[in-house]
Image (spheres, rainbow, N blue to C red):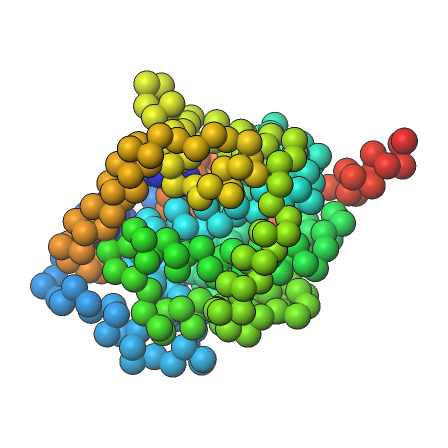
Length: 339
């Protein structure tokens, strides 16, 4: 999961000057999904309007050009916010007992949390950067489906997770972004995740943002409850986030993360509500950051998730086909057979 609060609010105009396509050359001739993080370089700055990318988005059709709109929105307009929002979306799903318990039983999230974080980010990043039907995108989706098929995951759980990826980012931008999502961006993100869900063979996918929102809210009302599995994954995630900060700051970041959770989510994980004054301060600080970013010039070079400094496990590159887990069978089924 991506940290809910980054170590610092990196200005939206700072970042690596990288091409939009193909992170690096493959190690051998032929197509490949090889990624390598490169050193940050000052990006080109040219006097352009702050709404430069929004104007580009409005010229596109969210029904046909949803991938391009989604790429512009996530890599140019809201790269940092998108990472926080998608990380928060995934974190929410741990409060559903069937999801949190399964992740706990695999042992991966508690034994190797940094690798699980890195692999999740990189697998989800490939289709967004290169396209759902690009060689890199198809390979990432294939790898994701291979992992999921090893476990007993219900279609309802899949639909819920997909809904969080649609709904939580919009809510995040409304609350903390330098501007809210435009209608084009909402529709494009909805279509993007509908297309991704179809490639994952998820059934009965909602058609509109409003339907996704209703699905998410209803599922959480019915399923959010305390479970040891979900609590263990939450603790492992918060510990991972703390490891990205200097020691004295780690407890502060944990408290700030709790302040960004809503009350039902905290209750499902067994956390007490933070002091109201602290919650107001943290949320106010996030909104202040958004107002500051609004004053900055638009980002001219894209910032993809794979370029995050919190992705630490592959300094020399990676192949999407080698990311993730390669389980022999569902750990839940194996435990039941042993009993």
